[in-house]
Structure formats: structure tokens, C-alpha cells
Image 1 (cartoon, protein in one colour):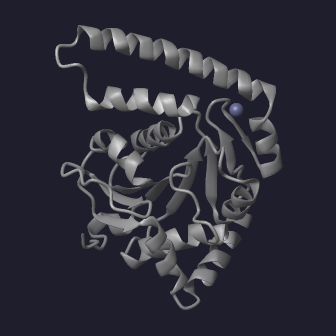
Image 2 (cartoon, rainbow, N blue to C red):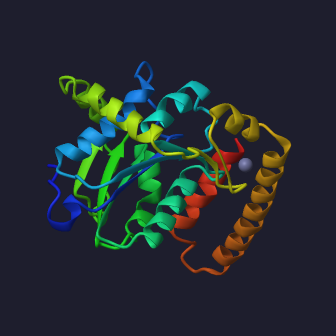
Length: 255
Ligand SMILES: [Zn+2]
């Protein structure tokens, strides 16, 4: 598809980027500190000039401390979400409820996660611009998910590398902006806590208190899914796509 330039109120309204970092990681060999600036440049190229926030969400099992240390100085918030891509989607919807349109939402994930969550993303009110970036291959197109722009994740990052010094300049600007704010960029959505340093964050993620919260979440999730199975048993059509997906993701989580 051809990416459409921002129009009207969307030019100056805010853009919130939700990055499912588990399924769509920083490509091997790519400088993680350039991810934030690359996303900013891609959005600015389409005319989005309003405030941009980027949040990376995931279980973070495959996200190294070095990657987290590299992305946070450019203003990216890192959140532990115990349900993986479903946490990313839940955080997106929480933000949307708290931030009235006009606004733009960008969702970054693998094609398979995008496919599994497209029925949820379709429920974002149409007053929000929806933008997507996904892995290195095209997902099966959901005709009901209306978007204004789409990128292949690696193409977005590579294109920014060819921007004649703009990328480095943007990195410097973002780092300067970040330094001027006293924020805690590392969050745990399970324990409702935040940290300034990646070391304190990863220590928390390996600690007993956090582990207990994970066990509680898994227990409540198991109860929820048992309830879902009962509902499915009573259903004549055997359920819908959403339920099947949730069950599949739960299996992944327990692997
Ligand atoms: Zn925690």
C-alpha cells in the first residue's frame, strides 16, 4: 500500500507507538539506539509533527540488558507485560481510553501477532489514525483493519540509515530531550513499579516478588481460560477466532 501523509488535526496531534518487542525485536547487528530515531524519522517523513511517545512492551525474555540500555536514552519506555503481545495490546487500549482522538496509534509486531490481534485492533475507534509495522514479511491482510501507513520493520529501520545524517541528529535531539526529563523508563505492569536504571529493573524481573506476581497471573489466567472453555462448550459454533488465539498464546507463554 502507499503510505498516506498525515492530514488535518493529525499533523499536530500526538502519536503513540506500541512496540511488541518480543515478536518484533531489534534486528541482529542493528544499533538499538537508532530504533527510536528511525521511528521518529519515518513518522516525520509522513508529516506527523506532534508529540511522539514509544513504548516497548513484552515479557522481555529475549531482550538483552544492552538493548534496553540502548533504547531508553532515546525516550523509549520499556514495560514488562506478563501476557506478551496481549499486554502490548492492553496497554495500547489503556492509552487510547485516556487520550481522546484525534491521535495516531502505531503498532509494531510480527506478522503472526498482528494477524492474531487484528480483530482487537479493528476495535480502535476510526477517529484514531492507525499505522502498522511488522516483521520482515507481509501479514495476511485483514481487509477490515484500516490503516494509513504500513512498513516492513526492517525496511523502516534500513531506510532511516540512508537519511544523510538526519538519523544521528535525531538521536542527539531525542537524547537531549530525555536528559531534560526526570523519568523512570523501566516499568513492570504486573507489580505497578518503575525504575530509572536497567540494572534495578532486571534485578526486579529476576526477583521473588515478581515471580509470585507471575504465578498469580498464571493462576487467574488458568481460571479465566477454564471459564472460557465452559462457555465454548455451550456454544453451537465452537467459539470464535479470539478465543482460539488466546488459548494458543497461553500455550506459547507456558513453553
Ligand atoms: Zn514485576
